[in-house]
Image (cartoon, rainbow, N blue to C red; front, side, top):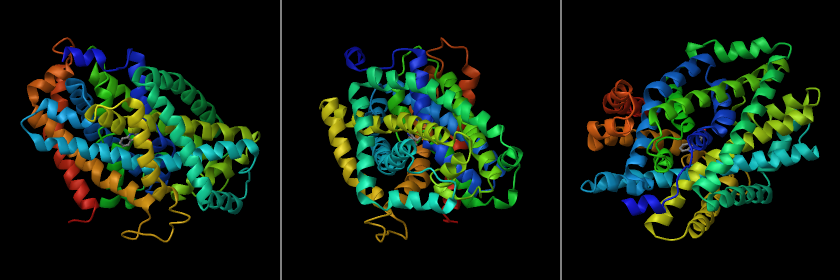
Length: 453
Ligand code: TRP
């Protein structure tokens, strides 16, 4: 045990731990998924369900994952074995997480690829138009080009590969610590810009006034799925990051801060986007293309529009990078520790495999646009299956494992740092939510949302 702690890399400071964990949570989920899902599912009523899911399901599970990881100091797969060697099948949960993180990356890196491409195209002027038709044609031109789709995805692989190879403290922590402040700065600028627009009020009203008629089992599942996706849950990510937390780090407090800051980023992203969308007479429910069609068209129309388009996609790229690092770390840590190979080897193997499965998502709108499974493209299958099936199942598994198998006493020990912290009340509420509320709620919402009953 002692030896392992000495050779294993970890986060080196409280601030670095927070930056890395927040870097994982904040991502395209805030800037791409959150605005388009809120836009398409009725604004504030969706927001409300999302907030409730975050508080009573997301937060406890995040705390549980980090605690399990730190208690075991192992990758997502080995964590379950380390904590309960006699219950072998629990390792499958870890394995599912490793695979889940991999399949999220398979489509997430493609959305990040579009973001990277858009920064470049905004700088060169290629996507600057105020005409929605032309904006849509620009996006189609990008996604329907197999060469561009693959090359930009590989550019993303190279960026995240280099940082991951640099290591946990010198790569992930060092990079996120520098990028997170930049992210907040850009977001503030864009928000102020949004609020100063004439007609901004309508965008805010849309975001904050509820339309309950849009709520049904499907939208509730979507809101819960978003809560999972946002806090990087159910896929071994927080377990893996937790294994790099220092013993003195206050886990409930860190998780709470990350949750609040992450919500803040989503709100700010909404405030940066919706007022502009309304001010220029666009529809808020454009779906996944909101980010790539509506946003460039709307921002180009502003004075100094080009600058705003560039920094908007810069923001998205920064957010996406921190999230991808945490996703890539899951299979990389798993492979290098289980197969006892170097980090470099394990990163390269993971990226090569990702090149294979990711290309199926990258080519979903071009070479493979005719190939469908269950009526969905590979891109949509990866997205739907991970958010609506793997993440909830992973969440249930983590809740049950931490609450019932690892058990109450050990969880209390982990959450209070062996009694050093005076937070046993919070710890008890968390464990209660994990044992009873989370598994039941997730199961009901998942089965109902999938149309099982
Ligand atoms: N939370 C990130 C976002 O909102 C995405 C993400 C990173 C993620 N790691 C994850 C989602 C693990 C699910 C599981 O963009």
